[in-house]
Image 1: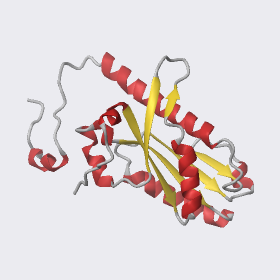
Image 2: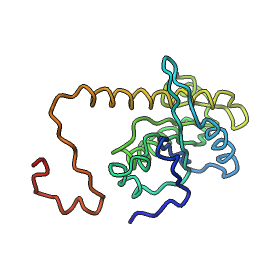
Image 3: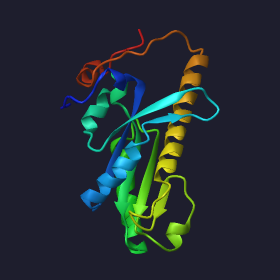
Length: 194
């Protein structure tokens, strides 16, 4: 069952929704310290474009609300930023598995995701990856905002490519049938194209 979001306002229709969640055990005060830094990037001026992209962050978002994304686009989770602590390379495999599990929850609408790992040092932390950022501690993470900026730009690229694909699509003037999540079961076996 979907739960109403009473924090929504009219301006939310011009934003994209990014969920920021902890993976595993993360101290609450440290999580909200990083969450505050992430949410400070609320609008991004896209390079090579005249556009601004506005971002709305939520640290708690029910997956059931994501089902309404086709009908109400501002409820669609398009980005996921996960924050975790990892003390050793032995814990890394389990942490990566939890992150992939978290991505599966929003997989139907997710365009991109990032994992911010705090505390891991060694060979794994020295690997350059676009989807994972490693930091030695919660205090020593100077480029979090820059990483979020790059993350938002990657979401914009996906959104823009989808817009251009739709603009050049010559499959006809078929308008997709919009329905709320509880109506979908009524259309099983029916031809929705006619």
